[in-house]
Image (cartoon, rainbow, N blue to C red; front, side, top):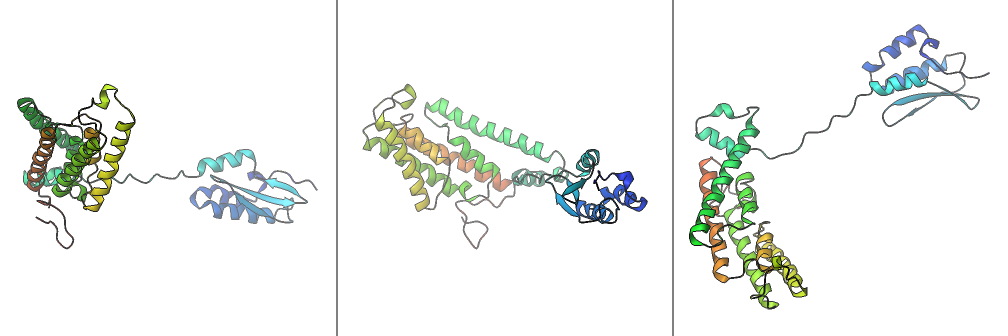
Length: 288
């Protein structure tokens, strides 16, 4: 006896009805109904088995080692009916600063609005622009480095994740101070205080070791003093690479961090965020 392909028209009327409703039930239940029908089919009565593919299912009815399968067309239709998995939404931060300002300014309608993220983007844009403009103006007047690359990540932490421990005033002030000290100590150890900057192409073994030592010391000391502030890793490289080496300029850099920290305290607290004056402590919402 030769086993032919099991088609929809070969099945009994009630089986066809079950197959038409296959899209409304799980694929396992649909496969089970086809198997049950195949077991009672006079063409294939010996054994029945089923195998499920990754994105679809097929039913195999075996007799005398010859498979009876659904037709290729039925198999393609089953694959098309299989729903595609839905991707989970992204985990993102909530715009706490913008929501607090909306309440303080008497605009509660902005809360939960579809354009809330757009408003948050505009707030971040104008606040970052104002922050850097003030510090850049001071740098232009004093002809001193009140603006430096690692100040940008610090500002982003202050206004994007203000309740993060790394965004507290203590972590920012201590972190940048540790980075400045470690960078300058590395220059002293390898005798690079008065050497040209690495940006001018003067990179040798001493400069490589100084950069590596400054970054590793900064990371270790920030952890030891419980003052982890990631942007400080860039600050120490600014010094160890010879971009800023004068002691007076290092003090000005720390003063710029203090000014930015003061602005973060004013804006975040005005927005109604429980932003600490100094650091976060366990058992209390803020520590001053």
